[in-house]
Image: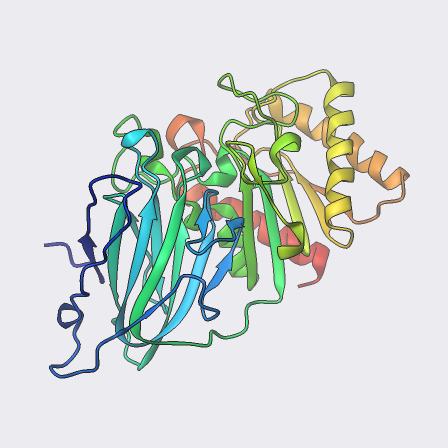
Length: 368
């Protein structure tokens, strides 16, 4: 038996589109004493529930991107989450991360189109804070919260005032980094995804900041890999970035810092075309985020041929933006080549090292 602080209860329905009829919660299994009051069901739109990331505003909020997270504070020893998985292609299930208080977070994979997770808290106390993070990206489809059942939902502590957004590709998504369940070349493409432990959220947590990942595997600035017909400037204003759909309201998240980590999938391009498109993208970002500090990054998985080219591009872009009067644009060049994960991506330990570099960079620029 696995000694996880989570009991996974599965509720399968005849079809993905069928209206769910939630089974009565197995509250006794979660440790409630005999005769305890029945838990209360809370809708997913309850104001006690905090969503951070690109979320579709709906009765059952759906989210596609890596790193979108949901937080709530509950009273009692446990709570239940009612979740829906798109099950894109009829077989692909999302991975999630569950963190309760200061316990070690756990990575789980969804099993059905509609699942019920009973989350047990093991740290003593009458109230607990739960974070659920989507570990897999938009290409695997959406995850939706359909509701919460617990003794009582409480007001969360105030969210961190600092906000960071990370724009990028598969590295930013957390692709190919977690071999704890299946090694490289085993299972499906998404089995090694772990957005929660990727460099962006790690950096944000180190800086006591909220995070938002705007990233798609394979995407580029002017050229994307794998026969993709999208580029970052085209889909940046969408909730479902991979499918280029659902307009995103930028007023819902105004970051203090935006990092841009693009170029890995572009490869070596015509310098005028790449730099011109990059400068235009920064201008587009400035329209959405007039006060944000923009930090342009080299790719941490770029090899010895691509790295100096990206550095050259970024030095020109930095100079051009400063020449045009934007003094809140910076660059950062990663010190090492991080490529020991699946498909040449950074692995878990390397994401920690990348986060260490970026944390120091942001601290220095922002004086945090």
